[in-house]
Each structure stands twice: as structure tokens, then as C-alpha cells.
Amino acid sequence: MRPIIRRIDALNASPNAAPIRKQHLISVVLLKRSSVAKPKGLELRSYDLKFDQSKLRPPETVGWSSEFVSFRSQIAEQLWSTTENRLNDALLAVDSGSIFKEPELVAVIKDAMILHFVRSPETHRAHIASWRSAEKHSRNQLMRDPSWLLAIALQERGIGWTMTHSANDVADMLLAESRSAFQSGALFQSSLERLFAKLRATGARSHLEISICEAGDFVLADNPALSFTSSRKWPRVPFGDAGTIAMPLGPHVIASLGPFDKIQQVDETIAQRVNEVAVSQSTRHLFFHPGSNLDESIRELNARLGRLRPPLE
Image (cartoon, rainbow, N blue to C red; front, top):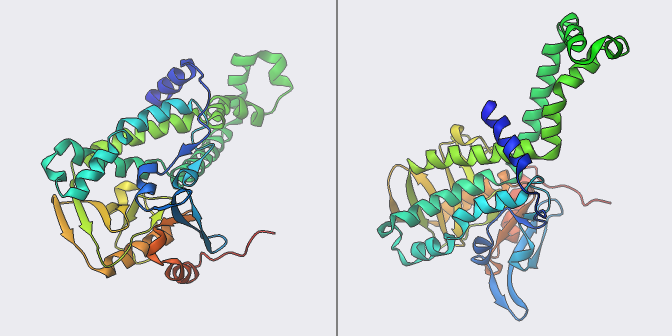
């Protein structure tokens, strides 16, 4: 916990530059690879699972959030850029088949997979759920001994404050710092940095598998790095619980962590299974090449997986 507190203090002390309003959770270079040139520029198909429909959209206008990192977001963008600035070069090496001749670009692909696993809507949701659970547990533990809480209040605030406040108020006082760090986004920012560093080191020890599927098309979920387990329900699980993670790098190519470095051809059934996982693990949106004709299959998967929702009023 102390390293997190030290990092939060450092973030608080850092210059408060203008927040990044358009934080791309999916690298634009990945979205562009699923796009086609139209008279007005590049476009890809964006499928909304909530409304069960798709639209053509410019790649720069999808896959972003204005509030993913709400605290010192420019620092997070600098961290992501250490990987994303070289991602296009690595993707070109994948396309040419020369990726394993350039170990530093292999590392970029693996880091990009980790980055997208960490920088995802599900990570933010998990953070919120985890903090709320931890705060509830901490409060319950504190409230087990009200006399101890009142003794702390006497030491910290004096008799006047203590006589007019309850044990619950004291618990609020003791939890105020962590709540402030949570509400400001500083706790999430520091947690993201630590998670990225930890998983990046783990990913570096794995090998990279590149699978090419000429007969099928991959979709890119808004949680683009997918976790794979033995469960056929395809739940998204923490990195450490996954058998592997995989991420489409384009309509016909997907990267995964594995036991060997290799490039392999796979058949259409692999794309179909990956797309099923993508629909299952998506928060709301899927992105794919306009020529893929995947609308109907996604609609069927969406209905079968229980993700179909009525439009909002």
C-alpha cells in the first residue's frame, strides 16, 4: 500500500496540465487497419450491442473516453505513448512476416496487448467494484470496536468534536483520504501504472503467436485484448486467471501470448470463436472492416449470449 500512497503523493505534486478530453482506449492505428477509404476519409463499421445496430464511423471518432483517467491524464498518455509510438512499425513487420527478425518489435506487440488489456472499460469497472468492496470491508472492521474509534477521535479531534460525532463519523474521518484518492481518480491512475508494469513484465516472459485467417474476419471489441479460459461461456477474467490473452491486429490477423514464437495459418472456425469471445467480453461496442459482412452473425451472437437490450427511451 505504501508504494501506492507514495505514487499518489507524486501525482498530486505533478503539474496539473489540461486534461486529455479524448482518451483513445483502442489505438487509432488498430482501428485504421479495419477501415476502408471513403470519399470523406477512412471509415470502419461500429456495432452497438445495446441498440443492436451498426454504423460507418471514422476510426478517430470511436473507441475513446473523456473520463477514463480523470486525474493527471496527460501522465497516462505519456505512458501509453512509449508503446503506441512504435506500434505501427511493429504491425508493418507483422504484415511482412519479418516480425521475429526484430525482437524489439515483438516486445512492442506484446506490450500493446498488455496495454489494451489494462486500458479498457472492464479495468475501470473492476477498479470501482474493488474499491467499494474494500471500503465496505474496512468500515465493517472499524465499526467492530466503537470505543477504539472514539479514542482515536479524542486523539485526533479533541473532546469537543468527539462529543458531537458518532463512531460512524470517525470511520468516515479515517477513510476520508482513501475516498478522496478514489474520487479524484488518483488511486485509479496509480493502480493502472502498477498493473501495466506488472503485466508487461509477465508478458515479456511469454512468446508471441501470430495467427492469420484469410477465410474469416476478426472483430475488435471495446475491450480489445481478450482473455481465454477453459470455460465455453468465455467470461473476461483477470490476466493471472487466463490461459492466454489475444488481440486482433487487423481483419485477418490476431496476436496471442503462447509457449512458442510462431506465425501460423488458421481456418475460419478460429475467427468465429474469437468473435464469440469478443461479443461476450465487449462492454458495448465492436468494430470491424466494412467489407466483412459481420452484422448478422454479431446480431445472432448478441441475442444468443443474452446481450440484446431494448433501445433507451
